[in-house]
Image (cartoon, rainbow, N blue to C red):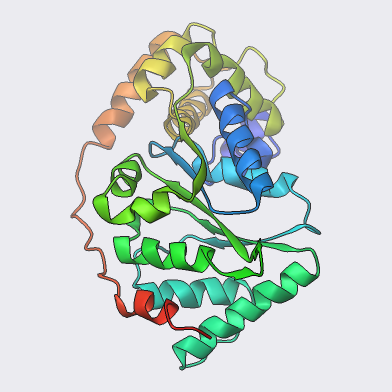
Length: 295
């Protein structure tokens, strides 16, 4: 890393894979997705759903939105662990809202409800943000729907934002989730960057990282990068990071289309191996029953 920082006089690595809202690039797709998110949040009720391919920038988009909203108005709880049973999901939600865990599940849910009521009394809106929502079971989604039904008179106590991969849309279309679908007030599918956005995206990331070499990427590299990555931001970051490393090793100050094609092919070969499938933990269906208990 120090090699790249020193060679290109960077403050930090511009093509990291970890989501960082400081590097948010407002493509047409991402701006439209944010508009849908902000519209949904303004309603203060129901579900907002954002889907997109792996690496499309859903998490960065959500972080950008959370950074823009007024902390005196919203209290978000971000859940990134989703392959869990329903009761564990409830505990994660409670922990994010600062509710102490107890063994009596009904009492625990009552404490969460009271915390949301307290927030509402202070004009603070509670939001549950679920990342990687495609890993949620139907039972967990139904539990979230029941949570979203909790209200203080006519005022909803919580709103839910779901971020997931494309297969999540198929889950939502299932016959057992009709009631949840009726509570979706805003939904958007985030597509990849277009060819014309590749150059501005790369230059934006470089500038955010402190790079002053405006000609570092030959414009002829942009179509190559678009073809190799299908315009997915995370794939672009991965390839561009490798291109920077190659340039530093080779002592070059400009990345050409020929180099970009060669490195893209090398990267594809390096990543051409599989992973064993992961087993999803089956949730405990008792949570939905528990939520139906009056308290």
